[in-house]
Amino acid sequence: MPRQGPVPLVAMEGISKSFGGVRALQGANLSVQEGEVHALLGENGAGKSTLIKILGGALPRDAGTVAWEGRPLEMEKPADATAAGIRVIHQHLTVVDHLTVAENLVLGTERARFGFIDRREARSRAAGALGELGVSLNLDHRVGDLRLAEKQLVEIARAIGLDARLLVMDEPTASLGDREVEHLFQVIGGLRERGIAVIYISHRLDEVLRVADRITVLRDGRTVGSVGGPGVRREQLVQMMVGRQGSPVAREPVEPGPVILSAENLSTDTGLSRISLDLRAGEIVGVYGLLGSGRTELARALCGADRLSSGVIRVNGRRVDLASPRDGRGAGVGLIPEDRTAQALLARLSVRENLTSASEDLISTFGWIRSRTERHLAEAAVDDLGPGSRLCRC
Image 1 (cartoon, rainbow, N blue to C red):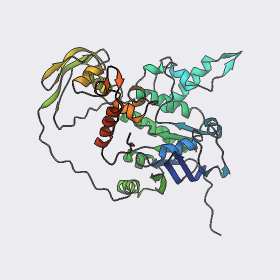
Image 2 (cartoon, helix red, strand yellow):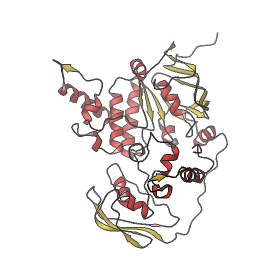
Image 3 (cartoon, rainbow, N blue to C red):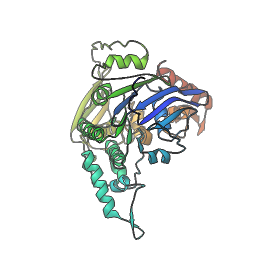
Image 4 (cartoon, one colour):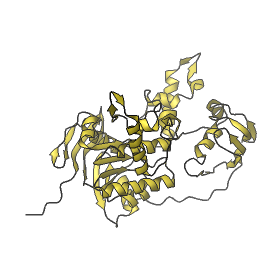
């Protein structure tokens, strides 16, 4: 008889899920061993988030099976996954802004003495969770006042402190600087040594190749295959994700055009101090720095979200006073914020309404929305994204 391998910690087989007429998953498979760092890859819309929501008990599956250590695992709600030892850190964070760092880290697991929450014990556990992650944060700081990257570290520390056997990380480094990424990788290495499995979802292939023991690729809701070992190449993963041989993108040299945005000695109450830069037509200027260096604050100042205490912004050579994002939009300056869920997208509105929410002057008359104009404007925006976009026509 052929030798049987070790029983996976979790095995998902033939998982299918549809939303109306859209099939998000079509017989997808995922198998993860104890103590394994397993990367899950795929383009946007490949089905990664849907598969993880099913694993975390947030969505029911239409077909397929989930086994935990070889035994069927039925999950009707996230609490069932938590009871099994599965912790999911979603891309959209679930921290509670009005609570402190310490309160968030022990949320749902508070212990009481004589009917009251034992705050000393809670602070001790919270400090231990942050210490394990290698992060220093004020336990009494309100989470709503933290930067997005710091909120993400709080969420990761909370999950690690809950004795998970399987930890799912969905784009955990999206807002982290290099130093924070190194801390995270050290923590993942420690989890592996303790036998804790990690499902690592990321679009950053260099990170995946560095941290993962094995990699599973999804495409169009199906599992393309799983690969592992030191011989895996970036080009191989790209081909699995897109279904064809990828070719390197060649960037042709471009002669810079005239200066269209000029910032001179910008300072703000949020921490900027005499920052200057020029942006020319047809040019991409990268702004880089570690967490807390002022990258986000500069972007907010340039679009009018934060007021200047000193300095000058010029657009096409004309000085502009940007007192609000509306002023920035009027000057032709827009911002895609790092926390798009909280600061940009309106989750309860449709794609059409989100695409036109900042264009009320173009789609309304005397306060009444012109539905046909709104639809045409939204459809034009979808078309501008190109045929590769997965947005539905509105």
